[in-house]
Length: 191
Image (tube, rainbow, N blue to C red):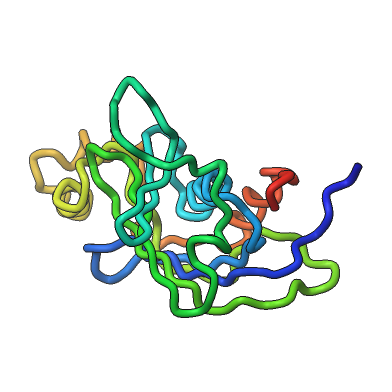
């Protein structure tokens, strides 16, 4: 049985907090998408690499991957649809990725729309700036990293450029590339 299209679409603005100028993405996703799948979409849209744990915080509730080993009370992201935790425009919640670097993302529901005929969701409408490299050390580590790669006289200039693969443009954002990655995610029974 082929997956059906969404009955409604959430337009979200996702902003990485604590960094200026801001790093953000505007996405449209199925309202019925579960939070686990939203995590996957955010990873692709922002440019993260699925290398660390995550959680969503909605009010005083946390959603993620329940793990008895950690003993943290957390609700299942797989069992929770987006429309349940953020049903209408103006709803705001957060997404944390990598508990070590603690990348905090603010998610705002901008609109809830009917799906457009022939449009494949999820899709990215816009965004600004490149996502920081994984394991850079959070906001402060990222600031130090940028200082090092911008200043050829910085003692860590060469080692930081080598670590990041030779070059890093903090202003880069490729809408086409994001949408190609989202398209390659394939259909999900939760979309």
